[in-house]
Amino acid sequence: MTDKRLTDSWLEEYRLIRRNPIYFLELYWNKLYPEEKVELTDEEKERLYNKYCGKPRIKDTKDLREYVQRRDAARAKGLKDWESFM
Image 1 (cartoon, rainbow, N blue to C red):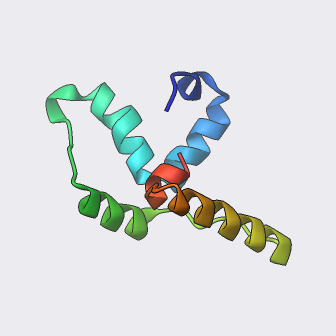
Image 2 (image 1 turned 180 degrees about the vertical axis):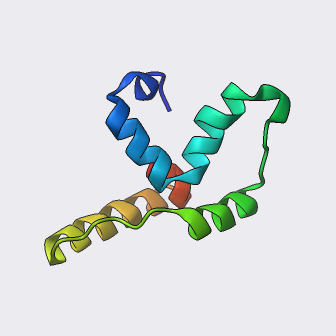
C-alpha cells in the first residue's frame, strides 16, 4: 500500500474502512493507538474479514462477473481477500 491511499478522497477511505476491517485495523487503529496495537495471524485476519467484510453492490451480471474476475486475479497473484480489496 502506498501513502497515497491515505490522502485520497475521504469518502473512498470511509467506504474501504466499512468494507474491510483489516484495512481499518492496519491503517487506522494500529497507527492511532500504537499502545493498543493489534497483530493478527493470516488465519485470524481471514476469519475477521469473512465475518465483517462488506458485501459488494452488484446491480447485474456484468458487475458480478467483474467482481469475480478481480477477486480471482488477486487470488492468482497470491493475495488474500482482505489484501485484494485494500
